Length: 287
Length: 287
Image 1 (cartoon, chains in turn red, blue):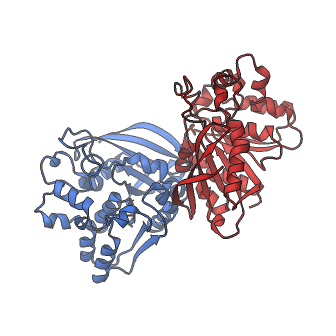
Image 2: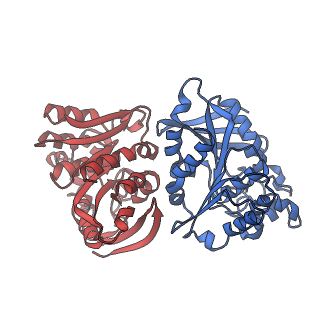
Image 3: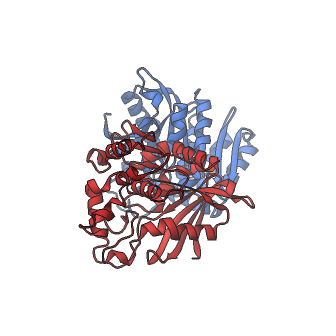
């Protein structure tokens, strides 16, 4: 459970910590980044936490360098956690063969199909082991005030983790999420690989469009998708399916899906709206 | 003189253009990036321009992805130009052998020593050819309102171009500039290579600490240096020499050198203070 600090970098008046720990859920060392805003550096401080889940091919580094979340997180006093996107180096055959499956593509699920059960348990890692490790190691983080966001595969992760765990997160937002994975090539490949082709019920349990139908009570979300996003055009994201399902279930009133003209799938897109997403979460986190 | 647009990327309400053109000063195709803020996209608009000169090893891409100048540039209505740091692919022997000389290390001088005279003329490129190309191609840029900033080797470039050309730039700022190159290893290696070991007068003409002694009239600058910057500790930057020379010449009153506690030499450092630098230039550019 102990966390090793491999670097400390000054950023926007706070500190970006590069960390690693031995994780039992994923059966390997896991690297992640933690941004502590200036408010967290004061004695006795307790700051809320925003989890940012990255997309395919990324590690926790990309967004901490290019996503611009630290700008508003510093202003609002919110810590940001940037986890990795999969286990690394498990020596599973085929693990590094594709950009959209295996390394860098854990899809925030617990695999039930061999050999991926060996450590592809990013659902348990993100919802249980990483927060337990964080809140044990960093007393300046407030475990009672946690929100979640993410990009692309990480947007899928943010939506599904929020919808599967009512009350765990104070708020959710997403950038270009894979919103209906059971109906797009990326999701189908991942779920086939991690769960098996015949496990349709399991697939649905990790599909935001299926999950939003089951939600009870008020539901609020902020989702941005760029109209110039090639993966949106290729129907990998399918936000319309998500909105239709939410509407059919009467759960759409609080979902703010913004189609952002001309924006693509890159970190330029996220950086442009990071301030607004952090402010959205800050409001729900009481800062 | 014609400029080819290789990509257009939405960013903070404006557009980041990836451009290239055939440059005669550098004897090769030169890539650069131009950020047009939303204010520049209106018909008949004229926006001021901030040149950002990059450091060793970088191209115009690094800062446009990780420097976050676009955030404040969008708010203030300032265009940002991110040029490359040297000619590329001139087939000069040894051109790609070192990170601090040749490719990626043009040092914003016009070489007088063979074989670098073949195209290592980044001084003429940045002060003449690139602005002429820009203002011919982009009528929305106001050629009468131009400022300059830069990082490390690019901070050296910003300071020396400003000090050598009174009136050319409305304002200057720098992040961790190489402030006294004739007295540090990086500068000595570069000037020896591009000018020759015995050209001491030439060396001084491109040294900010020498140039600041000659300045006539009021002088204002914003300079940030991190106290955790390893290159500062290794005496590659020498801001104290610059300040002493300015003071001895009575030119230090308007120079705001800020030693930023714990910050390093990275883009995390620049991103943290980019808003303030852009605001500083915006004030001088009349926006």
